[in-house]
Amino acid sequence: KAGVTQTPRYLIKTRGQQVTLSCSPISGHRSVSWYQQTPGQGLQFLFEYFSETQRNKGNFPGRFSGRQFSNSRSEMNVSTLELGDSALYLCASSLAGVYNEQFFGPGTRLTVL
Amino acid sequence: QKEVEQNSGPLSVPEGAIASLNCTYSDRGSQSFFWYRQYSGKSPELIMFIYSNGDKEDGRFTAQLNKASQYVSLLIRDSQPSDSATYLCAVSRYTGNQFYFGTGTSLTVIP
Image (cartoon, rainbow over all chains, first blue to last red):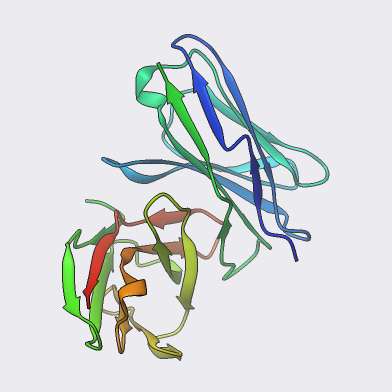
């Protein structure tokens, strides 16, 4: 079974631009979560989508948004990029429900110049 | 107070020794507990999960959960240099699917 895929793997943007990242979950997984990972803050939860609905949301500004499609693929968007948005963005999928482990994709490394 | 706390380390153990990694959590409603391993430059990889009090063994790995003390640990027996990585503890509540991660413990196994 194929794992979680994320595209693109690397991105370089400048301040003020916007970016869209994509995540395809493991086949059959309906929940997709997004995380931001930086050396100083560790893994920070952004949001979780299940059946095209945002079910949980972390403490990030409204510049960070996401959506999920009917095939469970998900995208996250960051508008008006800031230098501090440089990070590894990780997507994780799970079957969703009680006691469900999450499996991570390889991540997208975003650099904001 | 952070939801999940781990000693950041670094923790160094000699090859063949037992490595003990610890994690505490603040939410008594937490139901699911996970250990992930993350190599430098890679994404986290799930190695163990535990839901019930007590021990759970999988090969060289043993997860231990004590809900009364809000404490979960990971033991790695016969540590190998390839176990050198950052180990992340994560907890999840019953409702929804939001995970809370600790900042990770860096483990180095010395040959």
